[in-house]
Length: 343
Ligand code: 5MM
Image 1 (cartoon, rainbow, N blue to C red):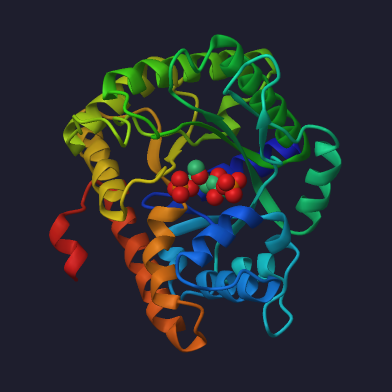
Image 2 (image 1 turned 30 degrees about the vertical axis):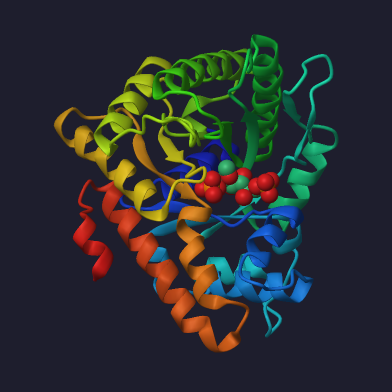
């Protein structure tokens, strides 16, 4: 086995360690500004650094969190005592990851569809990120369900970019997290979400195969199969777990070691409950992959509200993050119950 393969294998094993998941703290400038303005905090380099330092230094977080996805600005920042944030994560027993796509633009020729960019110069950027301490990377494709979209062309273009990104990551020794997100926005039914997610994952795995991506050294970060937020018929955790696992069993090869879901705008409790329902089913009928979380909002929203930009709220915010991480860890083991929210 080559040194790079060994490195990739070790990183994957650490990321999907039993009972652990990933914290997505890779909000780009615009997104973090939105999150901060919801709690009346100005988004500055300093406030973003303070907030992320607070999250990463949460005592005991590594009991439940294996890795943290960072944004370009964050991976280059230092904490208040001059420790680079990736080193802080390492000292806390967590791996640093990095979001490497550069966001979405309208996909020319495909009205209303988007294309994720960032392949130009990617190998060079990844090499720099690795030197800064990154051990894994993330690229997100965004697919919207609406009248006549996503089209096969929209899906295929995004799948090609995801697959090229993943191949380049593996070449450099970074584990790629492949994130094709079918958005919850809209009034579509759970059946429509299932059909679209199944199509998207089929096309993505075909592209990964064509680009010679080694499935054993990647992680899939998909959406759960849920009805659109405006759909009048919502679904129970049991229905979501059934629909999601059916879709994944049909499309994701067993060689993929881990599936870490995004939360996509679900409430904190729903994201935990749905993940738990899948792992409960997995106890009865074993799943070929580790099924865990890579949540952004569903891990951070209570922490950000508790923090409110005040240093004096640091401990309360860390407790809020710790709680969500602990509950999601329980969900990875299929041992979560709603009563645990109160503990
Ligand atoms: C879908 O968003 C990813 C997971 O977060 P949620 O659990 O909140 O859905 C997240 O990693 C996202 O990709 C990053 O926050 C970056 O998003 P932007 O919009 O800033 O590129």
